[in-house]
Structure formats: structure tokens, C-alpha cells
Image (cartoon, rainbow, N blue to C red; front, side, top):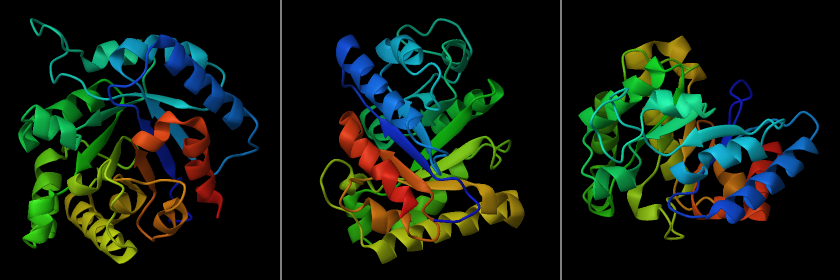
Length: 255
């Protein structure tokens, strides 16, 4: 973790939580963060669409950033069931995930789809958290680096900067499984991402982009992962649904 890039701890709640659950979780986190003097980390929560408005109210006055899990590439139109980036901005969102592996797999989203969504996010003055990562078969086949390079180049908008874009590396085989790559493997991929960003954005800009690790980060392994040179935080799934676990991960940024 760099001393110049402020770490981000982002919670992806996925399709979990009813109104009472989400409000309670967000309120707990807001109280914890409000009790922290000058936190070194930025905390972000990405609830389901149904909870965004209520969570926005629950975290009012706190430093928690509000995010969404997805958006459509269009601003408006005949897209039943979809949500646009301007709608999310209107609700108070600051961040939007683009290209989470579950969207790529379950909804067949291509790199071009992810790039179009990321462009829409940036056009609405929101920040994109762009997700990339290999499957278990690709890892076992020695294709991790090629997959990561391809997904990054195909998903990154030309207008991406360190100020408006975050990259989350999430090995698909590690999400929700309790398995993680070794620390050396995580750092190797993150270093590759940084190098590829330098080619696309220039070295100075790439040096400021935050790179998150996603894939079974928990209170037990967070300190080691966050100590890696090119890991600037985490995109947390299951552990973000328990305030004590999510807070413990955030506190690992201080170690």
C-alpha cells in the first residue's frame, strides 16, 4: 500500500439486504467512522438499487461514500429494469461498479459493454470502479496475465484518470470461496495492472490510480494484502455485510 494513494475499502453488498437490514448496517458503519479521528482510508458501500435512497439518508453527515453495483450505458430510454448513471448521481452516488465478474458471467457482459458503462459513469461526473480478473481455468492454464491485460485495455475508457477511476482485480475463483492467491501472486498482478495503466495513461497518472483487491478479503488476511506495494484497498463482498468484519478490514489500513 502506497503512502501517496489513500486506500479505499469498498463493500459490494450484492443482492443482499432488506430495508431494515441495510439501514442498520449503514448506520453502524457511519457511527464507527464518525468516531474515527482522521481515518487514513476511504470507505464506500454499494447496496442494491432498492436500498440506495435509504442508505444515502442513513449515512448523511458521515464520510462514507455511496456507490451502486451497476448501471446502463445509456442515460435514459426504453430499457426496462435498468438504471442509468444520471439516476444514480441523482440519488447521491459517487461511485459505480462496472464489469464485476458476476455481471460478466451471469449477464454475458463483454469488455466493450463494461467500457461503455464506465464511459457513462464518468460522463455523469461519477467515479468508476472497473473490475477485471481471471477464472480458475484461465489461472490454471497460465493465462492470468493475458486475461488481465485484455480486460483492462478493453474496459478502460479514454477519459479515465486517477481522479475518476479505480481498478479492482478480482480473481473469479477466489470470490466468496475463502480462497485467495498468495501475496506474491496478488502483487504480481497488481504490478502488471499498474504497468499497463502507465502505457495507457502515462506513468504519473497511473501512479495515482487506486488498485483494489477483491476475492475473499477478510479480517484475517486484510493486513497482509493491504501491505502489498500496489494494493490500495479492497472490494469486499461477504465480509462487508457484517459491520464488525468490514470495520476490521478498514482498520487494517492503519497497520
